[in-house]
Image 1 (cartoon, rainbow, N blue to C red):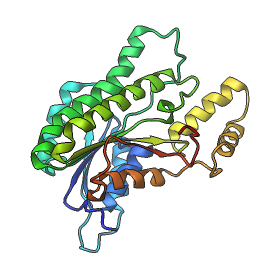
Image 2 (image 1 turned 180 degrees about the horizontal axis):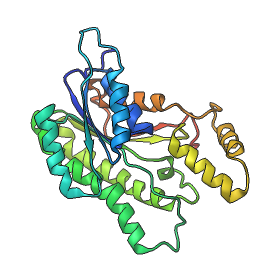
Image 3 (image 1 turned 120 degrees about the vertical axis):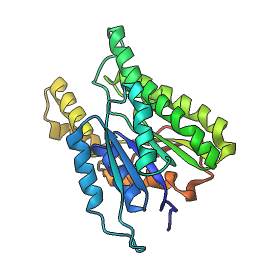
Length: 268
């Protein structure tokens, strides 16, 4: 299936590793030019290398990428970075809002400043970037805003209070946004990962193992057994779902919440 992403420009936030890297590679494989934003220069360089290693498409087109190193919490830097993407690639057609996970935390007893920092990093930054790319998308009558969250927005995960609360805010925001921009050819959807095999998931398994005085391997096996498919997902499997939502083929999907979790979440 041709997803119609050739000659489209995508911006992937948090593209330096894990889900973000897999998404960036998937979009580049489909022919999109991809701007890669991450706080780590080394990590984003590795993503560029992964994209450059892709074979050319049947048309002979080679994947194009642009690396951007900036802290999303620094909202003043967003405008200049987006302007650079337009200069060096073209206006942004696809925005993938993917932010790093906050540290584990209980819901009570957290410093207000910690909540504020997490809110700025995970919510304000996403809204600020989206607000700046939306006018162009609406004027061109094509746009995709895809926000990656967490299974905690469906079933809150113990000891991940920051993530559960703030990613849930993005769920409400995305659903509201979808109704505002749909008539202009712009879609807004949320994608929810289950247990995907990334460094973040490994870190959380290790943290849980330490709290319970068990091995990380035992925790991972226990978690995998709770998934109907009996395994963690691969980042590429998650990225393929995002690539489809970014495509022309997904033009009638908006305001949706798509789970990529191997059947983990039992909620209807």
